[in-house]
Picture 1 (spheres, one colour):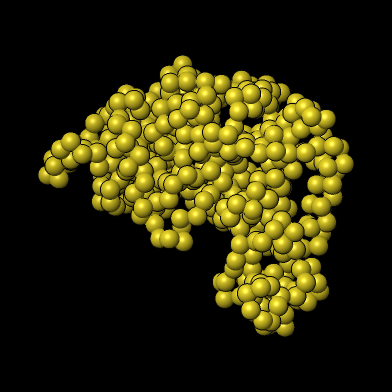
Picture 2 (picture 1 turned 90 degrees about the horizontal axis):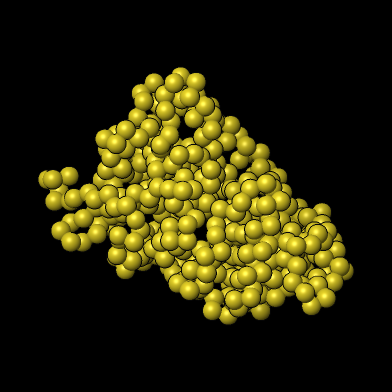
Length: 433
């Protein structure tokens, strides 16, 4: 790096990085998310959520040109593999069986957050490649077994591939606010009110929800969205929503500074209970969410379910609050991320209403163009969250284990590709007549 006048510095805390410089670098990326904001990462550490005590030892990798931050990434030394959502337990077991330590390992990731996005923040592609090179070199010097870039952006994947990291693919489920223009007998019809001829009635036998020439528009309403689905999916969603309404449950939502302290407290009761019911303490502390409410309130949307005037469940959604300065205008649309859910009472279909139907309806009404439902869960397809591929990149210091993992990833990758093809063949949307 000497010949490029770029110096690498490994910092022990997010607090050692200037917040304005970090966030300015994030805004230059093609795939920024609120989870990579300096405020978010600092809160994880200051709240006691991601610390050495919980198995997350921060080591932030930074590249500098004179006094200018030109690249950076969150880097954590891990003593376990919890809270990552890219599962490598089998790798750790293989190391242990051969008497080779797998931990500590290093992850370039946002703790407890399986949301794809920019991880390697850099001013350009060449500097991004220097950044991942610096991460691997530092791991080798420190005797760290491996480095893992989790839920990487396309730019991160490209830089990692150039540095000979191995790629691993998983499947997530995302919803897009794209209503295909309806067709009748091969003729494209614009939406009502946007010129003749008018579109056929939604749900009619002659209406098709197949996109024509790649054209689409946002859904006009939740009923418009339902009308794009196949009859069985549409019927099922209506039945599930009716069960919740018939149980006397209603919802209210608030965003940003309008979320009351009492609602944050109630949300945490629900969030904590969900974890405890599964026999584990929650990853995130109440103090973490207090810091979110204080430092980046605009990034949060809270739904509260009520019955007989009493709150019974809640779901917290993250919303992207800034566009990338590096991407084109079409990518500037807001994105919503389903994150945390919990309930104090059991109501039939309440989970589906709270985690999918309420957020999707809000996205349609607010013009949000994408809702990311998170990791795992084929049941999300019945709610029109479609499969997408998420990618991580991996470097292993031990040559023999690296060869074995590479062969494993080739086999696993073929399986993921076939799985995606099978899922894509089960589209919940109408098919052409």
